[in-house]
Image 1: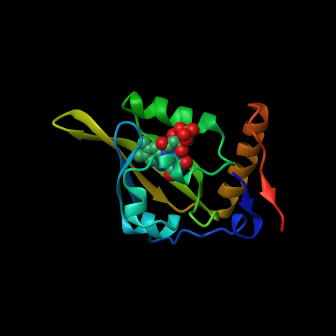
Image 2: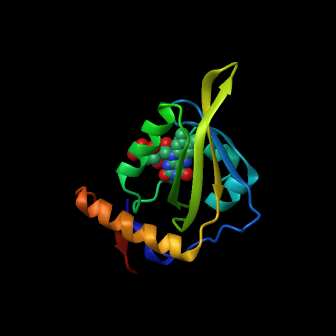
Image 3: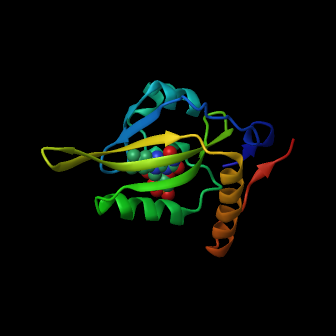
Length: 147
Ligand SMILES: Cc1cc2nc3c(=O)[nH]c(=O)nc-3n(C[C@H](O)[C@H](O)[C@H](O)COP(=O)(O)O)c2cc1C
């Protein structure tokens, strides 16, 4: 996929009081997206529900981060991490996500993610870390087409 640089480089800032929530089935298919998640990702809930949560995966994110996320939540632990996500318009936003299981009568039925805004230093630190991780893991570097 190629990205149009003019949108790709635009950050959407997550407001302090915004509640960004989504839920997935056990395979990572979105089952619920609140208004805050729709707003920040640029999708309607109809466009999100039924899709894989990787719909908002940003190419700057190393696959190892998501491997760790899945290993953690599948072993019924809570995962907390800083994530750069891709908007529908190919812009981006940063969040700190808390991903954990949803239980019904003690049985794991879904996963949920709650997100909070992150500060500039945290974004910068993670951009550098993720760039390094992708290079070390032989993953692609950024693909931007300047027009
Ligand atoms: C509840 C939940 C929330 C998730 N939130 C995100 C997210 O905001 N951004 C993201 O890129 N992946 C998120 N993921 C991970 C995706 O399912 C997926 O593993 C990731 O985007 C990498 O894509 P891939 O598995 O196709 O390589 C979430 C997973 C779960 C279970």
